[in-house]
Length: 132
Image 1: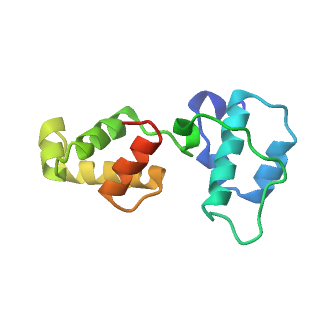
Image 2 (image 1 turned 30 degrees about the vertical axis):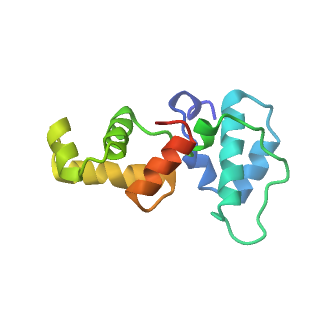
């Protein structure tokens, strides 16, 4: 936790599943610790773990924008804002002076972090989380 905290890593812990959650529940509460536990709660609710797996302690309620397991980078937020404006990948690449493949890579990362499949879902989820 002391090494991952300054970088804000969360997915690193959540990907370890229920055993990690059980360990974290035993630690003293800190804002970073609470953020990780909240992410576990979101993973459980979205069925990211196997059937019947639950953590024994409810996670504290955090602002909706912290519901992301891994935060969006500044560039990903910039791309997401342009997606929300209705720009195509090609238009985004021209506006940001990026290769088309780079924009598509950012899209994949954005979709993964927001846990969506489509551009419209990404925009809706980002608005729901207060990112846009």
